[in-house]
Amino acid sequence: MRKTTAALIAFFLLVAAGTAAMAVEPPAYVVYNVVPTYFNTLEDGFRAFSGIRDQISTSGGEIKSVNLSKEAIVFQGSMGSPVSIPFPSLTLLRLFEIPKAAEPWKWGLGAKISEKGDPVLLAAKSREAAEKMFSILASFAAAAGAPLELRDVGSAAVDPTKKDLKDNGLKDPKGGVVQWVAVGGPSEKAGLQAGDLILSINGLPVDNNAEFQEKVWPTLTPDKGVEQYDIEILRKGKPMAVKIKLPSMETFPKPPATLSFAPPTGSPAAGQKSAPKLGFTLRSLEQAEITALNGKTGAAISELTSGGEAEKAKMQVGDIIVTCNGQPVAGPKELGPLLVAGENSFVVMRKGLQLTFKINPVVASY
Image 1 (cartoon, rainbow, N blue to C red):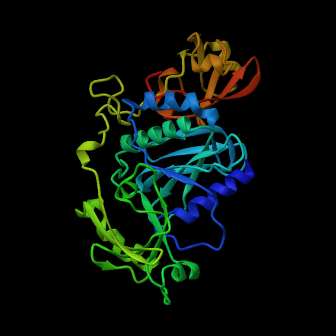
Image 2: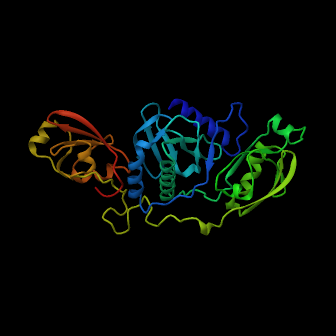
Image 3: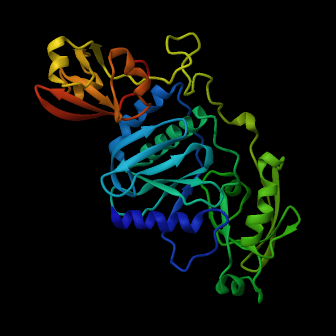
C-alpha cells in the first residue's frame, strides 16, 4: 500500500492542472471522465459509503473512522493524521487508474483542493468503488452548497522538457505539453493527444505554460462564459488546430432538492442539525444510577433496535451514556444537539466499567 500511495501522490502532482513538469518519472496512468450520479439524501450517500468503506483507502491506510459535516468530510486512517476534504474549496475530482500498481489498489480519486492547495488522494480496489466514491463526494459537496464544476476540458498541460521542444522543432522554451487526456472527455473527443504541444488557446499565446495556467487560464473557465476552446498545437512538429467544445449544462444531472444538510421543512428537527440514526432509545437515570455516577450526568439505553448501529457496535440495554463527542450528556433529550453527521463517539458506564464506542451511522433522526 505504501508504494501504491507514493505512486498516487506522484501521479497527482504531475497531472494537476497548471503544475510544472516534475523531475520524477510519471507512473503509467489513465484518467477517466466521470459524471456523478447524485444521491437523493445524505442518508443515501452515507449508506452507499458504508457499503464500500473497506474498498477505499487514504494515505493513512485503511479508513478507521469518518466524520461528515457541512464544512468537510474527514477520514481517519489506521496511521498518521486525519485526511480532510473541505467542500467549499474542493474544485475538481479526478478518477484514474494505474494499471501497474500493486493489487488490488489500481484505481483512485484525486481531489483538488483550491487552485494552489495540496491534492487529497483516495485509493480504491475497483473502478466501481472509485466511481461510487466520486458520486458520494459530489453529492456531499452539493449538499454543502458547493457543487463541483463538471464542465471541464478533461486534460492538463505541463512545461515542456528539452526533448519536447526538440521533438517539435523548437529551440526556445515555449508552450505547454499535454500531460494527459481523460478518456471520454471533451479533449479526447476533439482529438487532443498526450504529448501535443499547445501554442495558443483562443488566440492567446502560451509563451510560458506555468504563467499561462496561473494568470490566463482562470479567465477562460465556464463560469467566465467560455464554452469553446480553439487550440493551436504542434504534434511532432506538425502544426494542427483542435477545437474543444464543452457540453451543455443541460446534459449534466442536477442535485435533487432533498440533498441537503438541513432537515426537511416541517420535520420535528427543523432548524436543528440532522441527527444520526443510532438505533437506541434512552431513558432518564434512576436514583441508584445517579448515585453510582458520583455527580456525573447521563442517559441510559432502554431499548436497542435489532440490527441497528448501536447493537452492531455491541452497546447494551442498561449502558449509561455519559459523554457524546467529548461533551457531557445531561439527559435523554439533550443528546440530539451533541450528535454530528458521521462518526459519533460515546463514553459509556457499564457495571462500573468505562467503555468507549464509536458509531458511524447514516444521517437521519435517531
